[in-house]
Length: 191
Figure (cartoon, one colour):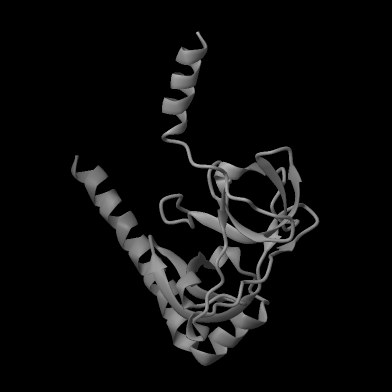
């Protein structure tokens, strides 16, 4: 019986690797398995989050991490969800981490608009291309005019700099909506 157990243990351990020896104070990356983020697509989201500092070991195979207050998840993770963090040694590739969002009283997250880059009509709605404060150009995002406040200084600055672009876009939207309404009326009357 013991020979069979030894053989079973030998074959089972052939495909296993020992857990990496993490120590408190080290930086690790967290695999984004079962962690929800604010990014619109899971496919395009980051595969690893962090780096996060290890606070302490919990048992033999779990570690407690120092997570930011904006992540509302339990801070203890199995070693299989952690990877060692290797800092970037190329100074040209250093990317400053984006600032944490401001959390409003109702729990919503708020980000500051650094600049409005463009305006467009999308499905007959006025949208602005937004550059978020603390983020680079890869994080620029199209936001509906309804989501921005008209008294926001960046909106007022955009209207002052490009007085005709947003107005023309709104006029084109009204004309397109009117034309769409006429087409529907013509279809109803012909049938």
